[in-house]
Image 1: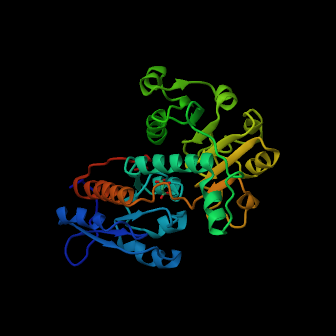
Image 2 (image 1 turned 180 degrees about the vertical axis):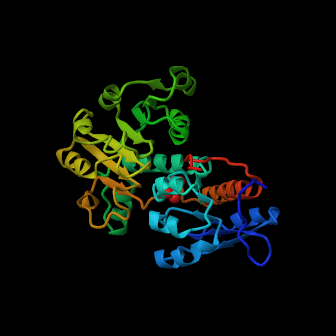
Image 3 (image 1 turned 45 degrees about the vertical axis):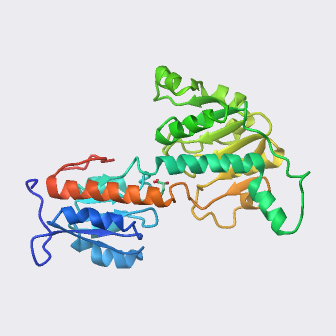
Length: 330
Ligand code: MLT
């Protein structure tokens, strides 16, 4: 047992773990191997409900619907660990957690392939105008002439961010005979070469790509990474896909670029505000939208739930920390 960690009593000497947001049930099975942990799974709770029960728990695991604000984190008087079933921790006030000495852990690998596959599905939906064609047939129109698409074969794909998801996208799109170029200041030339990608600077990527797909987290250096200036440097008719984080792409600028014809189409899975409400972009015909579904597959949801449950269980029970995203005080 890690010294100094107080057990949260529940009749016997047990740590209590709360899992919210209807996490995949396989996560509960993980705790069978940890007799000193009592885990419960619930749906998404209202903020006041969560604040009321949180003081009992040593760890809480959330997906994206629960926003762990500073107030909630402060309400969790006994919290030692926060687990995020997924990658992005933008729904957790990590700074507030660090200040309270709480370690935040995520599950970075489990939804990589699902997110990559979703980005590719969006790219193909754009290229072949699948949602528009579907709407047309349902409306008993037969608009074969108006719904002509473009091939991916031989086109240039610009990948912004060669992290886990970006790399899986690259591997798959090379099989479509696309020429792939990428921007990533943290990746070495040899790594890119091994992947079959040419590393370029942002200006080259914007100027040479027929399709651009974004795979970077949202941070101060990536906020509005694609805005008016970047859009103005793209070729006419470029297709843009964002399945990473809303805010990396400036939606108002994208709407202007669709209207001017600079963008041939846009596919978004993530938005500056989620859900986006009645955003003017949504009425644009040359666009495809999904409600943050990148990681929403059966397989990915089980993987991220099991991974984060194991991370939290090992941290509580054995003092073994994995996939921490902060350096908590004290
Ligand atoms: C992630 O950050 O893991 C994905 O965007 C999915 C999600 O937010 O649930």
